Length: 395
Ligand SMILES: Cc1cc2nc3c(=O)[nH]c(=O)nc-3n(C[C@H](O)[C@H](O)[C@H](O)COP(=O)(O)OP(=O)(O)OC[C@H]3O[C@@H](n4cnc5c(N)ncnc54)[C@H](O)[C@@H]3O)c2cc1C
Image 1 (cartoon, helix red, strand yellow):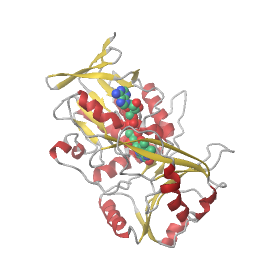
Image 2: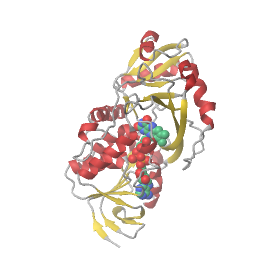
Image 3: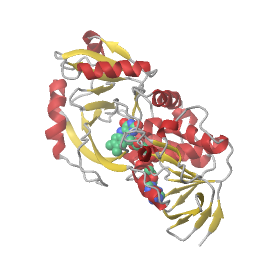
Image 4: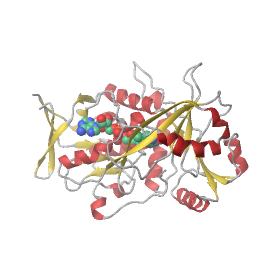
């Protein structure tokens, strides 16, 4: 059984953990250890995600975090490249388009105003302008659109492997394993014991365990409500190479889709489609509910896009959203456990925010506080205090 010392131990080495590790190494923190139990990341939410990146939120600091991240995403492939490999996250800034009908006009208008007030770059479109973005859509019931022109989507698996490789290349040490105990000297963190029996002495532990963030909290005798919730996606091949490229299109039914472009000549032209079932039974449920395709996804999709009649090779999968009671992340040191920093519970938005999160947590560790963003409202003890943060722009 080995014993070692680290400046920072990060639990979870997916997009959030790896972004934090990379930022810490960039700041010159010498001994950064990342504990990750799954070398293949098969159950990591980032591995199973849609890859949407949008600044359309109603909370100022969230908008700032994604705006910062958008700058990072647009340079991701160059910046995260290593001598051995260059990722192809391929951030396509085709925008996020919400369709407004009589059904959702009041709510979407209110949200649009709140997003503008929060500083989001978002425009109001007429039906004719919407039609130019989705020329094949049936728009008779559409009254207007709300469009974030700098938003878009990236390839989540390329993001994950690119972030991981870059952090490793920068000097972060990835250890395969899982913690079984977090040690405290009275209140403060002092170290971690792994299932292998190995121990790491450290004064700083980061909880970047995604949907399992609540489990890690309990190891420190803290109750932080992070609940796994199954989210289903389907990929389908379009009947022919589509003449235009889609932004992320959000139908009032809740169905939303994006292009999954061919990577090489000869690859099929595909879409990835989501429709969140907020009342799904919570828990670690990865089995896909394929019946949802014909029941929940296809009818509204076909109504909006009659040309999708001949979709083929429909394939569904499920991953976990990491839900908190207010659908916002837990970010920051827990006041009852100095040295334990939370960066989890992103409630389905963690991939897009991972660059800003890396910066925030690295500043907390190297400068004692997050200087670039004021994330005090996302403190991990806010649920116990009843200080929830509501943002109506979750989809
Ligand atoms: C279907 C789906 C679609 C999504 N779409 C989007 C989207 O469009 N845009 C967006 O921004 N976000 C999206 N998300 C959410 C996004 O994937 C997550 O918010 C993001 O991945 C959070 O990153 P993370 O690193 O915190 O968690 P994860 O990617 O889940 O990684 C957590 C890591 O911690 C490791 N871990 C957990 N417990 C332990 C332990 N005890 N010991 C060691 N390792 C441990 C896990 O193995 C895992 O690798 C989607 C998620 C799903 C499931």
